[in-house]
Length: 105
Image 1 (cartoon, rainbow, N blue to C red):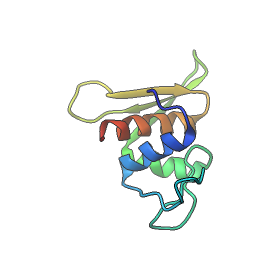
Image 2: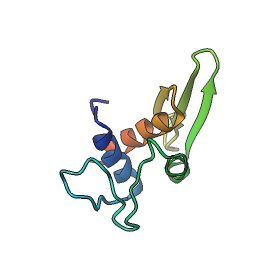
Image 3: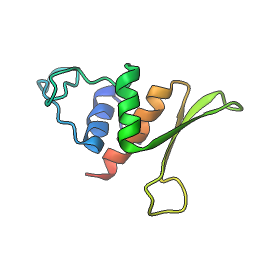
């Protein structure tokens, strides 16, 4: 994925779950337009878990690589269609969610 900034990742992940940004374009924060709360699944365990559940992302720990693996199975293929690994489980989930949102363009 060529997306590099947290804001870009948040925008793509939000697209995957249908959340609109209510913050001003110059803001670095992502505000859920519906709730008015700052949405930060890359930092907040609750936001990350809700994103994971909404997209049915599997999260497993790889003891050999010492990283979390986030996996998404879209049902149309016989294997996972998205896979990301990161030492931080929240970031791994965000990366997979952003990849899903990117495909929705």
